[in-house]
Length: 439
Image 1: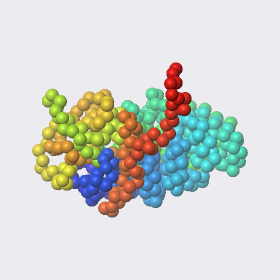
Image 2: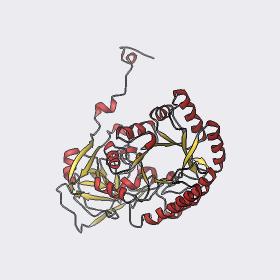
Image 3: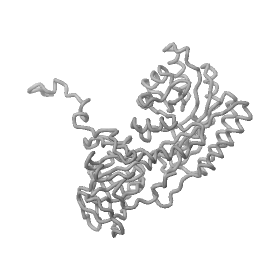
Image 4: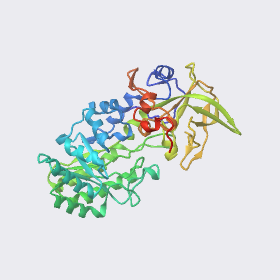
C-alpha cells in the first residue's frame, strides 16, 4: 500500500516525473495521474467480491482501462457513462460489468440500457415501471426481468451537506419505508428484485458507514431470498490534510461480511458483496499542475494567481474543499527548508469565488507556502476525483490536458481542448448574417 499524500512536501517531481517537463510538454493547467496510486487503492479493496468503480469521479477512458484490467467493474449514472463503460471494454448483460444507477431515466438512458442489456439499479418507483415498459416496447423477451434497488435508509452523512446522499432532504434512492410499495410494483410488473444498494454520502466515517450494515440486513430480509447481491455503496474518505483519517478497511469489510453471511444462512444461497468507490480510487493519484502568472499584494494579503480556475477544479468553490499544494520553482530546484508565508491562491476567472484556498461558505483563507515568482509552478494535490469531470468552459476557457504517469513515462490521455473544439457545436443562423437585417 502506498503512503497517502498526508502532507505535501516541496517536490519537483510527481511519480518520478519532472513537473517542469510535464508543463513544458503539455502546457498548464494539466491534470497528471499516478497510475501506481490507482492500482494500490484498488488493491486495498480486494476482500470485496466486486469493486465497482463510480466513474463519475474520473471517467477518462485510460483510467477506466486501468481499473478494468485490474478486475474492477463500473457504475454509470448517465447514458454517456454507459457508453464510456462499453467503449472501455466493460461487459453488459449477465456479467454486469456495467450497472446503471440513478433516480430517473432520461429517454436516452432508458432506451440504451434496455437495448444494450445494462443492469439497472433503481432509485425511484417510476424507474421500475419505465424500464418494464421499455423492455416491452423494444420486444426484449430475452432480457432477465431483474432489477436492483437503491434504498435511502433514512439517514446520511458526508464531508459536506452537498455530498450527503441519505435522509429526508436527499433526492437519492427509494425511501426505506416505501420498500414494500416498491416490492408490490415489481411484483405487478413481473420483475424480480435481485439486489439492494445503500449509499449515504461521500467522505463519511466508519461510524456512519457501519450504520448501513444493520439497515441493509433489515431491508434484505424484508425483500427475501430473491436477493443475490448487496452493495455497500461508496463514500470512503480520502486523506487531504492533517487530521484526516482513512476508514479501517479490514474492520469495515468484516462488518459487511457478517451481514452477508447472515443473509446467506437465511436465504440458503450465496450473496455477492459489492463496494462502489469513486474518490477513494483516484483522488490521491491526481495532481493539477498550474503556472503562477501573478504575485499580488491586496492590503495585507499576498495572492498567488495561477492559470487554473474553478473551471478546472470546482471542489473548493462548491464545497470549500481543502487540497494540499506545493510550489515547484521553474528551474526545477526543490525548496527544502524554505521560509513559508501566508498566501491566498486564486485563479484567472472573472469571478470572486475563483479561490482555491477557501472554506465552505466562501470564506477565504490563506495557506503557508514558500516564496514564489511568476513562472514557477503551483501543484494542487488530491485532484484526481471530481476534478476534470466537473470542469466547464466558463470564461471560454478550454478543458485542460490529462496525462498518465506510468513507470516514469508521461502518456497523454486527453489533448487540451482547442478553440475549434470549443465552438464546434455553435451555429450563427443565416438570418443573423443578412446585411441590414433588423428586428
